[in-house]
Length: 494
Ligand SMILES: Cc1cc2nc3c(=O)[nH]c(=O)nc-3n(C[C@H](O)[C@H](O)[C@H](O)COP(=O)(O)OP(=O)(O)OC[C@H]3O[C@@H](n4cnc5c(N)ncnc54)[C@H](O)[C@@H]3O)c2cc1C
Image (cartoon, rainbow, N blue to C red; front, side, top):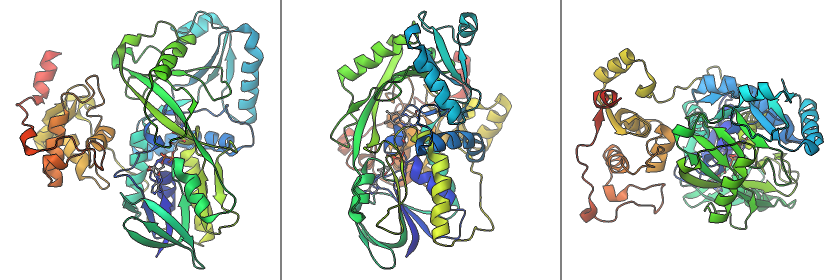
């Protein structure tokens, strides 16, 4: 029997798992996909919001600001990229200044530090040369930031695993029954018993909650679509640029990413299907059009890919956090739509504290707060890179030329605890396949490495688990020409 079973391994579940692993508890995470970060946590704007958007007093407001504050420490301890690049809300219509002022006042009420309304055109041009010429004023929030959501999610989960949390993948929860002593959870792999449950199942948190509670939740998927631009466009803006928010949220933003790309989006369209992460021509056209409202001269021909994510919008509009009123020991993290990524570290701390208290759990004497990420030789000084390559020549073989990812990194991504099992798993851990060619060149070699490391046939290698095989017969056996580059080849090419 477990003390706690967490359902869902997105940023919420991983943050709760990490914080619960500080206690002397037997904790398990059940995830229906084959990896962490396969739900909404993999497709969002990657912004750590400053915290002026949500209504004062709501969970969203309190935990956004608290989560934002925790990010420096978490990124240091868990070694994932996070940059405080600041954010701007741009008002291009002097007639709407009172809305900008209202946002400023809301931010003050939420205790967002450093907020400022800037009207000085010269200063704004220095800060952001590509702001729209129509800009009347800007709400500047210096604590706004950008993060790599994949690496953050993976890092928190790895750290939880290091501290004893068990992760079970391909374990979809199909039923939950309340017992006197706790809960019996049905998965496709069998029954699991636990004293408490943490429901962090994203879009499906209502379905799981409604299995044990009469006070029903209802989550509507709200789709947001994006265009991602090549790194050549990555410095078009320095901070994250928002339009004035509307009824459906924060509107279309333009932002640099921590990896140096430019991101534009999202739209906000309510859909029925909780799996509808397809993009549509209409929504992408809307992204392209609206992104120009606050930022000028965006090099839109540099789009390298598009994608969509689904917000878990609960009818009550706030995060649903706490023990279900009529199901003792069943703890909800539901309706975690934006700013859920920003708030996740704080949600993790809050929820872990509640659950541990309810179980009268004591803290462990030895908690490993630190985790190291995969070394990326491209970012190392020449001497250190050479040293690494002499110790392990696989770090001298470049497999993904766009993102300069080496064989050593890919092997490491597979060998780690909670290691990659698919092309997407490799992509999210190393960025192989994330670049301009979108995996066109490196996929065959990454597939070979996956097959070799996992001891499986090439025909069993998948894009993202399940039935997403990439080649279907031995006749399609992929034999790469000796295309792998060495550092010298690349550096000589400039
Ligand atoms: C378009 C868009 C833009 C956003 N931008 C931002 C932003 O810039 N900043 C910000 O702070 N927030 C943003 N968000 C919100 C943020 O992405 C989410 O709040 C956050 O990722 C939610 O994480 P989660 O772990 O709760 O859910 P998820 O990441 O969806 O994880 C839930 C997990 O539960 C698993 N699961 C579901 N059902 C079951 C089951 N029955 N059994 C087992 N496992 C199950 C799923 O497979 C999934 O892995 C955005 C969201 C969207 C859609």
